[in-house]
Image 1: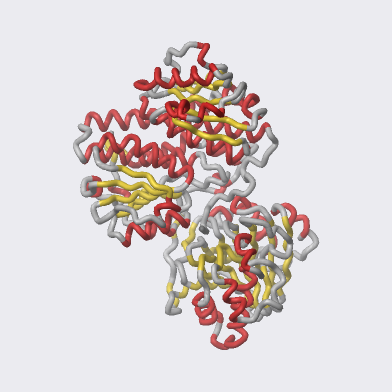
Image 2: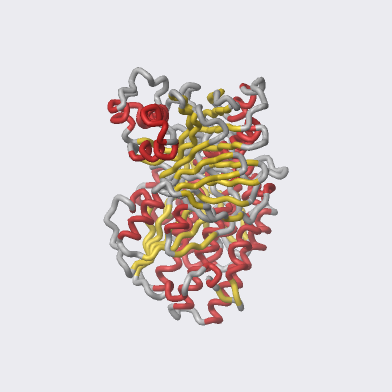
Length: 620
């Protein structure tokens, strides 16, 4: 394998393993269907019979291709591993799909082995390699180690094996001479495991386990997990065995199903009122924000002289909304940084800085690296995550769980809303503890925050009205979002949603910047989504919109019901209920999500699985 092929190795992938009394083929294929949002370039399965013989089938395309391909395979297997792959560049072939076999080793892998080329040379593997993946190199390295010293046992060989690797990984391994058992180990890339009367399970995401059990544990990094029927054995880095502490999910199987909706994304858009309520209500006592159940002390809100928010993508946009409110309220620096930039900067943070990291999965690799850098610099870290027991949650000083339940669609919707809800609770607590808010101010803030729940519900009832603006958007190659202040921050998320699932080139611009170059892009009929919800700068934004109209742009206006805006300013208009400027992000987010959703649907695209994207970014 040449160095030029490095970028096509596997990244955000779905992994599942099972051993027990059930039919392994069905368990694995059903699990892969649940995990397909993590990767859908190809899929494969390895089933082990009682003699130790391993039967492998793999196919490019979606999991349904693999299901058809394996229809004639026996249903009598009780041990197996499966993988759905997401490749960064090229290499989408049957032979590159997982699992990979090397001698007595069959394995699947999520992550990137950075030193695969050096390992190929060290173990003289060039003539053995059939695929173009780093994963096959890893399989052969383990086989070489096991062949040399298999009497030492799998655990010691795996420990030696991972000592050879540089990079991130989550492996599920079958040893041909140890039928009925699966061995797992990880570094950064996530793995969760569980056991019950139905057998022992391991997967990259909880959604694959929920049909069988609500209890699970997150595999600790560099610890070896051994699955046997009905039992899971966990070995620490010194190979001492111990019993893992099991966590329990608070949502049921239905939460990971479409339940009559055509797509997960639409279902998750409609779940936002409940999700926001689940985040807010348990943290309100006597009308005030209370984080005692989260073990977050009050002095966390008073010790710092700087706040640094670190996240990626949609989570970063949520952070930007809170920054726009927090900084003028507290009068201290509040910075927002993309996690992938933060980790390579030398950020000005210290023991008086509060670093807030935001990640739905709790496994986002850039955000995790940022967290570790912050800890090195003695900053306190508060994380906002959705998945209990995730790596980011475990390594933070304090954790605020968002209680969104599973989010299956790649494009984030309810995760964004609950991150905002959690951040707004923090804003209120900051204001109260730093005496920027009186108790009456804080109670008013919480009443307004609770009030967004019925407002979101009212916007969802306008679904068909919102859908009506889509035909003009999808017939054009470009779309622009404009706004001022908070409205500009909202527009960033709107543009991201539209481009990631409809593939329409979309950009967001501060409305006041139009005349500084951007207005050159406005041509007749180009759709411009103008967000106007901030009272004090409304007239300024309207003046900018008139500049767009004067050049023939097709203006879709998003404003509040009471806003007095002349009809000649826009071509189509969607309104939200009259609420305080600070809280308009919640209904506007729903409008923007529905515009993106119906744009994708009208183009007959795969809404839940947009090309080149996967749900959880666990490699750099």
